[in-house]
Length: 173
Image (tube, rainbow, N blue to C red; front, side, top):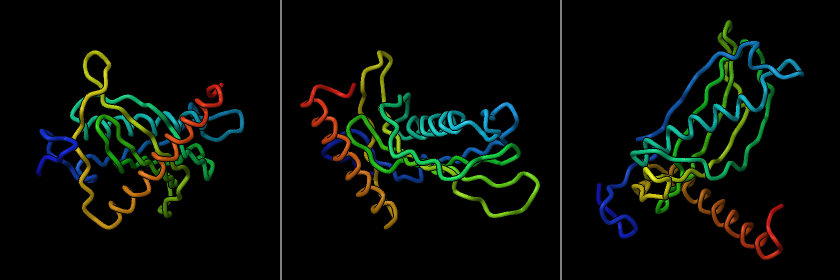
């Protein structure tokens, strides 16, 4: 794949090249006081899978810079098989957006999976000193890839505008 002006020495990659799905059965150790799977456990899975996808795309370590647009849509129960699917939707110089969809189905029944959570994470590729490093560009291949890329650019512009507005008004805390 050809290098681009933004990344003169790095060959681009399509989103499918680093896509990953992890499945895990939820047990009683994952529950909260309500008797359902703790949201923090789902967030941990989301962050872990996004980290692997980002590392695969960038050929090395990547850290979480932001988790946004997280939505918990359905409760997850003990015995559910949770499937965490992640893929790169946008890439810049050192940062990338990873979209994650979490579905669940029952371990003992053949039923369609239900979407239980979605999230978008911003991951930054880092070198051995923890400093941002260049990553390959993302090469959207399908109409869905291109649509996701455009939506990711909108989210990025929104994040940057929000950060500027909050900084102008004395920060976030």
